Image (spheres, rainbow, N blue to C red):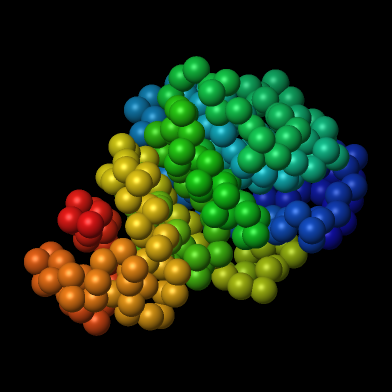
Length: 275
Protein backbone atom coordinates (compact mmCIF):
# COMPACT_ATOMS: atom_id res chain seq x y z
CA UNK A 1 0.00 0.00 0.00
CA UNK A 2 1.23 3.49 -0.84
CA UNK A 3 0.06 6.48 1.17
CA UNK A 4 0.01 9.78 -0.68
CA UNK A 5 0.75 13.24 0.71
CA UNK A 6 -1.70 14.40 3.35
CA UNK A 7 -3.98 11.38 3.05
CA UNK A 8 -6.07 10.50 6.10
CA UNK A 9 -5.96 6.91 7.34
CA UNK A 10 -8.41 6.26 10.20
CA UNK A 11 -8.09 9.88 11.21
CA UNK A 12 -4.28 10.01 11.16
CA UNK A 13 -2.71 12.46 8.73
CA UNK A 14 0.46 11.13 7.15
CA UNK A 15 2.08 14.36 6.06
CA UNK A 16 4.51 13.94 3.20
CA UNK A 17 5.04 10.26 3.94
CA UNK A 18 5.19 7.58 1.30
CA UNK A 19 4.83 4.20 2.96
CA UNK A 20 4.67 0.66 1.71
CA UNK A 21 3.81 -2.23 3.96
CA UNK A 22 6.53 -4.84 4.26
CA UNK A 23 5.12 -8.35 3.96
CA UNK A 24 8.27 -9.77 5.53
CA UNK A 25 7.40 -7.86 8.73
CA UNK A 26 3.79 -9.01 8.74
CA UNK A 27 2.49 -5.45 8.34
CA UNK A 28 -1.30 -5.30 8.08
CA UNK A 29 -2.74 -2.00 9.27
CA UNK A 30 -6.11 -1.92 11.02
CA UNK A 31 -8.30 0.89 9.73
CA UNK A 32 -11.56 0.53 11.70
CA UNK A 33 -11.68 3.38 14.23
CA UNK A 34 -14.36 1.73 16.40
CA UNK A 35 -12.21 -1.36 16.89
CA UNK A 36 -9.07 0.73 17.46
CA UNK A 37 -10.86 2.67 20.20
CA UNK A 38 -12.10 -0.57 21.76
CA UNK A 39 -8.56 -1.97 21.89
CA UNK A 40 -7.40 1.26 23.55
CA UNK A 41 -10.28 1.13 26.05
CA UNK A 42 -9.40 -2.45 26.98
CA UNK A 43 -5.74 -1.49 27.45
CA UNK A 44 -6.77 1.38 29.73
CA UNK A 45 -9.02 -0.83 31.89
CA UNK A 46 -6.62 -0.79 34.85
CA UNK A 47 -5.75 2.88 34.39
CA UNK A 48 -7.86 4.35 37.17
CA UNK A 49 -7.14 7.91 36.02
CA UNK A 50 -9.00 7.43 32.76
CA UNK A 51 -12.70 7.08 32.02
CA UNK A 52 -14.14 6.40 28.58
CA UNK A 53 -16.05 9.69 28.65
CA UNK A 54 -13.34 12.04 29.93
CA UNK A 55 -9.76 11.97 28.68
CA UNK A 56 -8.83 15.39 30.09
CA UNK A 57 -6.78 14.00 33.00
CA UNK A 58 -5.23 11.01 31.28
CA UNK A 59 -2.24 9.43 33.02
CA UNK A 60 -0.37 6.16 32.93
CA UNK A 61 1.94 4.59 30.40
CA UNK A 62 1.25 2.18 27.57
CA UNK A 63 3.76 0.38 25.37
CA UNK A 64 2.49 -0.02 21.83
CA UNK A 65 3.97 -2.84 19.80
CA UNK A 66 4.43 -2.06 16.11
CA UNK A 67 2.53 1.24 15.78
CA UNK A 68 3.06 1.42 12.01
CA UNK A 69 1.20 4.47 10.70
CA UNK A 70 -0.15 5.35 14.16
CA UNK A 71 -3.82 4.41 13.80
CA UNK A 72 -3.91 2.73 17.24
CA UNK A 73 -1.42 5.27 18.62
CA UNK A 74 -4.04 7.99 18.12
CA UNK A 75 -6.55 6.16 20.33
CA UNK A 76 -3.96 5.33 22.97
CA UNK A 77 -2.78 8.94 23.26
CA UNK A 78 -6.34 9.93 24.23
CA UNK A 79 -6.37 7.42 27.09
CA UNK A 80 -2.83 7.43 28.45
CA UNK A 81 -0.46 10.13 29.63
CA UNK A 82 2.37 8.62 27.62
CA UNK A 83 2.72 6.19 24.74
CA UNK A 84 6.00 4.34 24.20
CA UNK A 85 5.81 3.10 20.62
CA UNK A 86 8.25 0.30 19.76
CA UNK A 87 8.62 0.11 15.97
CA UNK A 88 11.05 -2.19 14.14
CA UNK A 89 10.67 -0.49 10.74
CA UNK A 90 13.17 2.39 10.71
CA UNK A 91 11.24 4.49 8.21
CA UNK A 92 7.96 4.17 10.12
CA UNK A 93 9.69 4.91 13.43
CA UNK A 94 11.28 8.04 11.97
CA UNK A 95 8.02 9.41 10.57
CA UNK A 96 5.53 8.49 13.31
CA UNK A 97 6.21 11.55 15.56
CA UNK A 98 5.33 13.84 12.65
CA UNK A 99 1.72 12.65 12.89
CA UNK A 100 1.48 13.63 16.59
CA UNK A 101 3.27 16.94 17.16
CA UNK A 102 3.23 18.05 20.78
CA UNK A 103 2.00 14.68 22.08
CA UNK A 104 3.74 12.68 24.81
CA UNK A 105 4.90 10.02 22.39
CA UNK A 106 8.26 8.27 22.61
CA UNK A 107 9.19 6.21 19.57
CA UNK A 108 11.86 3.55 19.95
CA UNK A 109 13.24 1.97 16.79
CA UNK A 110 13.96 -1.61 17.82
CA UNK A 111 12.59 -5.14 17.74
CA UNK A 112 10.05 -5.61 20.55
CA UNK A 113 11.89 -8.83 21.46
CA UNK A 114 14.97 -6.71 22.21
CA UNK A 115 13.11 -3.99 24.10
CA UNK A 116 14.12 -3.61 27.76
CA UNK A 117 10.91 -3.47 29.80
CA UNK A 118 12.90 -2.83 32.98
CA UNK A 119 13.48 0.67 31.59
CA UNK A 120 9.85 1.44 32.52
CA UNK A 121 9.78 2.49 36.17
CA UNK A 122 6.01 2.72 36.67
CA UNK A 123 2.96 0.48 36.07
CA UNK A 124 2.17 0.15 32.39
CA UNK A 125 -0.07 -1.57 29.88
CA UNK A 126 0.78 -3.10 26.50
CA UNK A 127 -1.28 -2.93 23.33
CA UNK A 128 -0.64 -3.74 19.71
CA UNK A 129 -1.61 -5.30 16.42
CA UNK A 130 1.26 -7.77 16.29
CA UNK A 131 2.70 -9.83 13.43
CA UNK A 132 1.29 -13.34 13.44
CA UNK A 133 4.65 -15.01 12.97
CA UNK A 134 6.10 -13.80 16.28
CA UNK A 135 2.98 -14.00 18.45
CA UNK A 136 4.34 -16.68 20.82
CA UNK A 137 7.75 -15.05 21.43
CA UNK A 138 6.11 -11.68 22.12
CA UNK A 139 3.64 -13.15 24.61
CA UNK A 140 6.40 -15.13 26.30
CA UNK A 141 8.55 -12.00 26.68
CA UNK A 142 5.68 -9.98 28.13
CA UNK A 143 4.61 -12.63 30.63
CA UNK A 144 8.12 -13.38 31.88
CA UNK A 145 9.30 -9.78 32.07
CA UNK A 146 10.82 -8.77 35.40
CA UNK A 147 8.25 -5.97 35.69
CA UNK A 148 5.19 -7.38 33.95
CA UNK A 149 2.56 -5.08 32.44
CA UNK A 150 -0.72 -4.70 34.31
CA UNK A 151 -2.77 -5.29 31.17
CA UNK A 152 -1.95 -6.77 27.76
CA UNK A 153 -4.29 -6.29 24.80
CA UNK A 154 -3.14 -7.79 21.51
CA UNK A 155 -4.71 -8.28 18.12
CA UNK A 156 -3.56 -11.69 16.88
CA UNK A 157 -4.61 -14.44 14.51
CA UNK A 158 -8.13 -15.60 15.47
CA UNK A 159 -7.19 -19.28 15.45
CA UNK A 160 -4.31 -18.67 17.86
CA UNK A 161 -6.46 -16.56 20.19
CA UNK A 162 -9.08 -19.31 20.33
CA UNK A 163 -6.41 -21.93 20.94
CA UNK A 164 -5.00 -19.98 23.88
CA UNK A 165 -8.42 -19.52 25.49
CA UNK A 166 -9.67 -23.05 24.78
CA UNK A 167 -10.24 -25.72 27.43
CA UNK A 168 -8.40 -28.06 25.09
CA UNK A 169 -4.88 -27.18 26.17
CA UNK A 170 -1.67 -26.79 24.20
CA UNK A 171 1.84 -25.98 25.35
CA UNK A 172 1.15 -22.32 24.47
CA UNK A 173 -2.20 -22.12 26.26
CA UNK A 174 -0.80 -23.73 29.41
CA UNK A 175 2.13 -21.33 29.38
CA UNK A 176 -0.11 -18.29 28.98
CA UNK A 177 -2.61 -19.43 31.64
CA UNK A 178 0.26 -20.06 34.02
CA UNK A 179 1.09 -16.35 34.00
CA UNK A 180 -2.16 -14.57 33.12
CA UNK A 181 -5.93 -14.73 33.04
CA UNK A 182 -7.23 -14.91 29.47
CA UNK A 183 -10.21 -13.24 27.85
CA UNK A 184 -11.23 -13.01 24.22
CA UNK A 185 -12.24 -9.68 22.74
CA UNK A 186 -13.87 -8.80 19.43
CA UNK A 187 -13.22 -10.72 16.22
CA UNK A 188 -11.76 -8.52 13.47
CA UNK A 189 -12.39 -9.63 9.90
CA UNK A 190 -9.56 -9.55 7.37
CA UNK A 191 -11.35 -6.85 5.37
CA UNK A 192 -10.70 -4.36 8.19
CA UNK A 193 -6.98 -4.31 7.38
CA UNK A 194 -4.84 -2.68 4.71
CA UNK A 195 -3.68 -4.83 3.04
CA UNK A 196 -6.05 -7.63 4.16
CA UNK A 197 -4.32 -10.70 5.63
CA UNK A 198 -5.36 -14.21 4.62
CA UNK A 199 -7.08 -14.95 7.95
CA UNK A 200 -9.29 -13.20 10.49
CA UNK A 201 -7.94 -11.73 13.71
CA UNK A 202 -9.18 -11.47 17.28
CA UNK A 203 -8.37 -9.35 20.29
CA UNK A 204 -6.98 -11.23 23.29
CA UNK A 205 -6.81 -9.68 26.75
CA UNK A 206 -4.25 -10.95 29.25
CA UNK A 207 -4.10 -9.85 32.90
CA UNK A 208 -0.77 -11.06 34.32
CA UNK A 209 -0.63 -12.72 37.75
CA UNK A 210 1.88 -14.72 39.77
CA UNK A 211 2.85 -18.06 38.23
CA UNK A 212 0.46 -20.89 39.07
CA UNK A 213 3.08 -23.63 38.75
CA UNK A 214 6.86 -23.56 38.86
CA UNK A 215 9.11 -23.88 35.84
CA UNK A 216 10.00 -27.47 36.80
CA UNK A 217 6.40 -28.53 36.13
CA UNK A 218 6.78 -27.39 32.52
CA UNK A 219 9.57 -29.89 32.00
CA UNK A 220 6.99 -32.60 32.70
CA UNK A 221 4.43 -30.83 30.49
CA UNK A 222 6.96 -30.72 27.66
CA UNK A 223 7.54 -34.43 28.05
CA UNK A 224 3.80 -35.02 28.02
CA UNK A 225 3.31 -33.05 24.80
CA UNK A 226 6.11 -34.86 22.95
CA UNK A 227 3.36 -36.55 20.94
CA UNK A 228 0.17 -34.50 21.55
CA UNK A 229 -2.19 -36.97 19.85
CA UNK A 230 -0.98 -39.97 21.79
CA UNK A 231 -2.30 -41.01 25.17
CA UNK A 232 -0.45 -39.15 27.88
CA UNK A 233 0.29 -42.34 29.74
CA UNK A 234 2.36 -43.52 26.76
CA UNK A 235 4.24 -40.20 26.53
CA UNK A 236 5.25 -40.53 30.17
CA UNK A 237 6.47 -44.09 29.77
CA UNK A 238 10.02 -44.36 31.05
CA UNK A 239 9.40 -42.10 34.02
CA UNK A 240 7.41 -44.84 35.74
CA UNK A 241 6.18 -48.27 34.77
CA UNK A 242 2.80 -48.41 33.02
CA UNK A 243 1.30 -50.08 36.08
CA UNK A 244 2.58 -47.26 38.32
CA UNK A 245 1.31 -44.62 35.92
CA UNK A 246 -2.15 -46.19 35.82
CA UNK A 247 -2.20 -46.10 39.62
CA UNK A 248 -1.09 -42.46 39.69
CA UNK A 249 -3.74 -41.49 37.14
CA UNK A 250 -6.42 -43.23 39.21
CA UNK A 251 -5.20 -41.48 42.36
CA UNK A 252 -5.40 -38.09 40.66
CA UNK A 253 -8.73 -38.88 38.97
CA UNK A 254 -7.19 -38.56 35.49
CA UNK A 255 -8.63 -40.75 32.75
CA UNK A 256 -6.11 -43.37 31.67
CA UNK A 257 -7.00 -42.58 28.03
CA UNK A 258 -6.41 -38.84 28.44
CA UNK A 259 -4.37 -36.94 25.85
CA UNK A 260 -1.98 -34.18 26.95
CA UNK A 261 -4.47 -31.49 25.95
CA UNK A 262 -7.08 -32.85 28.36
CA UNK A 263 -5.05 -31.83 31.42
CA UNK A 264 -5.10 -28.38 33.00
CA UNK A 265 -2.37 -26.75 35.08
CA UNK A 266 -3.71 -28.20 38.34
CA UNK A 267 -3.59 -31.71 36.83
CA UNK A 268 0.02 -31.25 35.76
CA UNK A 269 0.92 -29.93 39.20
CA UNK A 270 -0.63 -33.05 40.74
CA UNK A 271 1.30 -35.31 38.39
CA UNK A 272 4.54 -33.49 39.15
CA UNK A 273 4.00 -33.73 42.91
CA UNK A 274 3.40 -37.48 42.76
CA UNK A 275 6.07 -38.29 40.18
